[in-house]
Length: 549
Image (tube, rainbow, N blue to C red):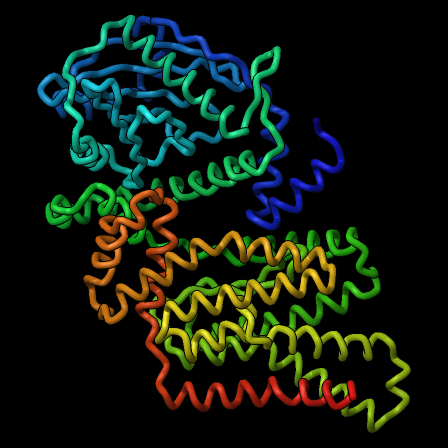
């Protein structure tokens, strides 16, 4: 049932776990009614000329690979409001025993008019299916082996399928599907998708068909759909030319596993830097939402401008330090209920640069607070200015808290940069200790915001554990051209990571690559850096303890 409590829970969790687009898409999608899908056999003559033109390029590709056209099926879209009928066109390669399906996707938001998937059936009645990043959320039963790659090239996807389907213990069953069999198979895969979505609490069965449910699984579904859609859109924009320019490189890649090739293709994609207008838009929208949500939970409206100003000074320090050290795609945005952040990209970073960037956030805010305090002592009339006084206190407290050696605060990241890059496993224990401290603070202060923070860290335990294991095993790998291949080969062949999907392996690979390309801090930097850090951290504690007594 849709009520205020469910809506607020959805907003908070979506902000907490995902992003603003998830909220908008989630609300829109929630009100879309779903219906049962009925598959029927059709003749190619029923298709309009425009649909035939959409299918033609993909059909020509399949024919060039030895596939022969067999039959076509038509079926209604599951989404009630989308009236355009969908079609599947079935082709078979008798020599290889591979079945190919061209699915038309003539609906708003689709990135292609038609897409191809490849399937091999086994004598065990299981099947292996290879997609190429067009199935944003693939739901399949235990009877299916599903491979979803990110090439943007059907030629590479077909080559991958021949590798994907070689599964130990499975014997390939050759034989073409009859026209009726192809229709029954398409109906089965559609029904299978609905059943899996019901089992995952994404949708529920109702008298009129199906409805989406406000659940965490539903939010993950929406988020993953948006995320993959962006990934595919990026591939469409750049991958075609890249594939043509690297035909010679493809030959050497054939010795790699299909998953390795897919990860390498995804990793080599250069992110497009956002426009200045897009960054300003994100900054303004996130800022408005930040203020509205903080006001909604009871923060005084008179204090909100002060909080925003303190956060801006903090993040501008990070931002300009990144710009100075040559970071790309730098921007600032707010994180509703948590604070703000500055981000930037740089392939190779030095510990000294990271150290200065981390200090550049809290240090200016602390200095500003101390300067205001100094002038208040010199001119007692300034003490009566409540806004100036509140700004100085808030600026000092928030920035000093950010210096505490707790991950992922700036202080915790400083300790990590100076000390724990040498000891990845110790870094994971430091992460757990930080989580314990935040949980204790949540209980003692009875803070809902700290509770959200604790949940966020808790959900990252497995990721950070896997990261520490990879870094420990790969430490010492030199930052040469082959470092990407070493990391990818490790994560695709290691027994402990075999159950991770490719979209979960990619962030690990990126983080490990970045950390391995970051130099380990020298002992001199570690000693001097920690000395200055403790110089900033310890005096306020001494003053606090002295004043407490």
